[in-house]
Image (tube, rainbow, N blue to C red; front, side, top):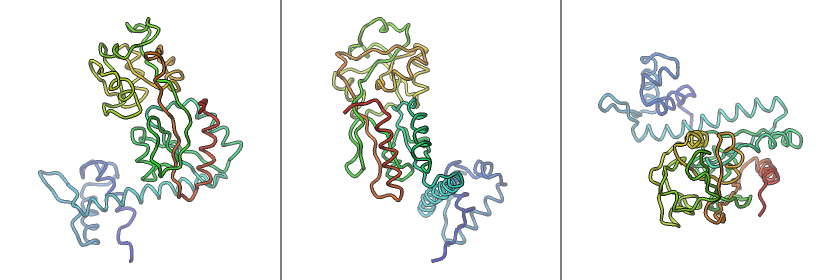
Length: 301
């Protein structure tokens, strides 16, 4: 069956999904609104079905439009990756591995990984995927990334998994914070201060599960900051405290003038894992990168 939609039309459909309106999508695509409206009608004519409807002056995707949106996102992402791979091949790279880091993860070990790859496996290109920090396993299943670095509970059994090791959880605060003079922070102390987190969704294997729920305590207020840099900046300003794995806390905390303290008896730990898909074309390259990360990190099983 012949393909009816062109790449240009798929780009239009994707732009409408991301921008949310014809005017914003037209700006993103650098075309006039009338030209974009013409493209919409052309795509609907080719498919012989309505892709969008208007409700209260808003353009909404029909069920058929939603289906094409999904396809456009996948097809354009794969085309973009193919172009990047070809560009890398001109420099001697024959395969590219995409690594997704969860929000908890530190980045201080990445330069060593790039250095080792350039020496030992120059044919492997490494890309760090953006915007997968909160849902790395989902990104892995959608094949937006090849490897996910995950903490907390073990990844699903259908992933190729490497256990990196366990990591103590530490409380981080500004040096002027009232708890900074304590040698350790007891779980009940968190109830008296605002808590700064990536998001407010409680997750198993992390601080909500290991500290707050286990000890029946909740902070006085939770500030959702979204990314590590924002969390550390707010904590550094003295507006709250946070909990991070030692791997991240000890490498990033000093940059923001933060002090780290053990929680309770210091026995609270989270686990770090690498996860990858089994059935992929570049499985050997993925496995090689996973082995390198395992060797570079300082964890011990």
